[in-house]
Length: 516
Ligand code: ADP
Image (tube, rainbow, N blue to C red; front, side, top):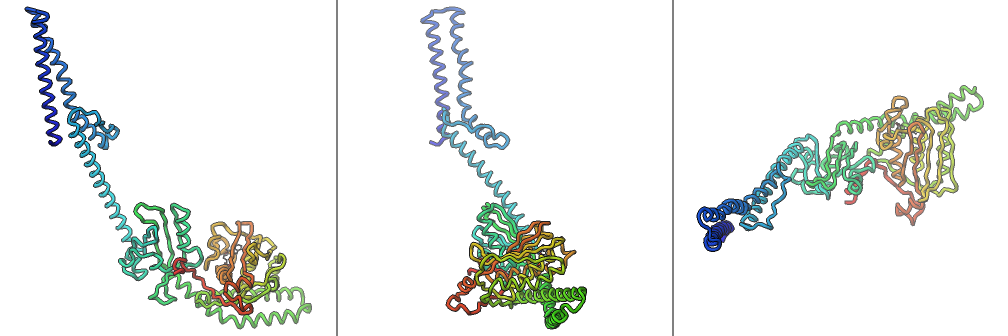
């Protein structure tokens, strides 16, 4: 018997029961009035009417209440799920006396229908939003990649596919690093940033300038160069954790590179006359020392200083150009660090003096023999001291300090008490062509000195850093390694006298790619 038949049977038996009860009561009433109380006349009829009157008032009320109970509970269930009356409580079906099975089954159908309607509404909403996401992502005229938690590409638009020269279908499902081979100008690579964001942040974003894409089908000098922006959102419900957008600047950046090559070509021609000029100035200084007026002596000094500065400029340009072409090679020898420091400082002291600045050199204790390329590391020192002189403002002291660190490295700091550096500029100082806009107008420069210093120190296995506050001077520091450590790193431990050759390049590969 199905639930509805069960319900009608229950109603039928209920009505039969009520009618039966009513009739029995009426007969009982009649029997009591006539046989027990023996009433007659008006009293007989009045007493006989008591039962029908009572049943006419009580029975309809009781029966209605009883019979409408199922309808009331179903109605309550509908109100409970309706959005406008959601505060109506869910019906309690435990104490239903009639049609329990039918009511329970109907209420459960009502709830099921409501949940289906809800799912349909949500799906429609989601589809609508997915459609607009797809539309935005596909029509973005910039290469866009979306990565999942494990760095798999889950979306790449058409410009992205074209940029890396692959079919859209061949990109989806691939590991990002296997299909996009990027190189950066410093070690704050995309890979390092993403690893840090995953470990420490819920949401993060970052931009990079002058990123290079290594494409097998394009020759080295024509590789695409772009700025990169990335956004990370941990545990994104759609599985889209990282978004990567590329802004192509190949034309602009390769023009810079070409300009650099052209400048390098021109500057190269200055080398021979400059060397001659410096030789003659030195000869004149030696020859004429004490024989000319102090004013003439001062002129000679200034000439020597200017020729020295020109020579630093020429070397910087040529070295940066060599780095660009992967041609800068360093030969690390056993050297005494105090010797190198003293001869660099002797050359630079006159440069400082003509600006009224004194150069102090402090060396703490015994320093181990270091493994360095004397010419290149002197260029690092020269660039740092030159900057300290240029940005000294009205202060008149520069301090060089050398000591052994706790890790056993030889660290050298160059401290000035000049204009200092704003905090916002610090992360960019070692980038190629970066110049702080605040002193760009007052002090000449190329924005290449610190970039070169970083690449050279890096090729030595050392580390360069800066500590500065605006208006309070700056301290630049770098480390070089004792020769024993360099030899160990170069796996040259058996043959201590052999040169160790290192090539210096400005591009830092994404680490993930590096490992492959
Ligand atoms: P530049 O040729 O402009 O000096 P560098 O690469 O040597 O190029 O330095 C980059 C920028 O770093 C400079 O333009 C300057 O703003 C800042 N800088 C470098 N050294 C100092 C310093 N000692 N004090 C203040 N600012 C400095």
